[in-house]
Length: 124
Image (tube, rainbow, N blue to C red; front, side, top):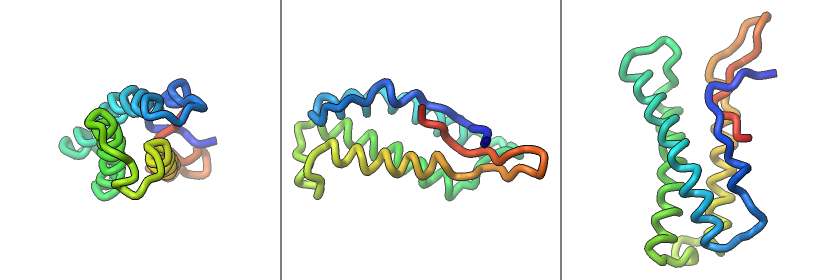
């Protein structure tokens, strides 16, 4: 079983509703946790920590964080999702959640024969 470098309790915010308000709530509640992880990992790189992530990997994570921010801000600004090739803001959220799951499942530290690999982000 892998070890997890970070964890976010995201499922508590997910509902079966696909309204703009429901999507906004998810983005609004998840963003502080995502930004905290991003800042923590950026500081590890700045300090030259041996456990720091690859900068390119962290750039990919930063793009996903920015996409969550974009969804939140776009809903607040009353923008239409169809202007950005999404049928709804729920579709946009689902796309970026999939990206987050993919990044979260990435191996950050390879284990040896005695211990398992460390993965980036557990979404519970």
